[in-house]
Length: 172
Image (cartoon, rainbow, N blue to C red; front, top):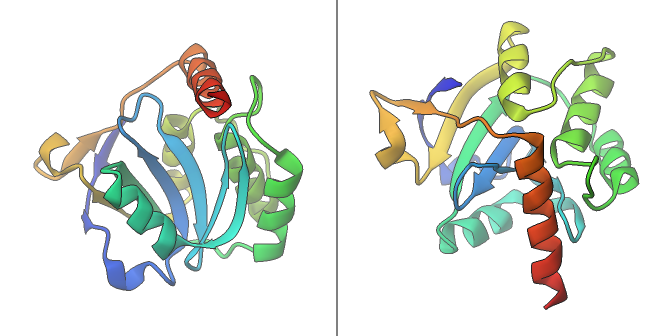
């Protein structure tokens, strides 16, 4: 998927921005999380995070030199609905990926089902519905061509493998 990057993420917007964050050392696959008015929501292999300052998360990811792609949404999302969906979804396992609670939250707000199993399927759907304002990034400058970034495709097996690796790294 080819994405036009408007600019780097503005630190001035961190406390009020709403959208989907893709992050990781590489994007094969990326970790996905939801940010609602500057509050971070995420289900990972080891924990569920709800209503945490995105500024805090952003600074932590930046310090660890993670790549970030932010899809700013033109969609009002309820904090309460998001918190309930993320808490009920729980930590990731084979059929529960980090896309799940994001997709469920957006479906809940749109009151419709979305046919997407990967972020590279969800983003074009949101674009066709005019729900994407723009894309911002951190650390992707060298991976762009004329401000376009190519989001790599990956398989369900790569997601499952990544979840297993993260669960094992937490056991050590």
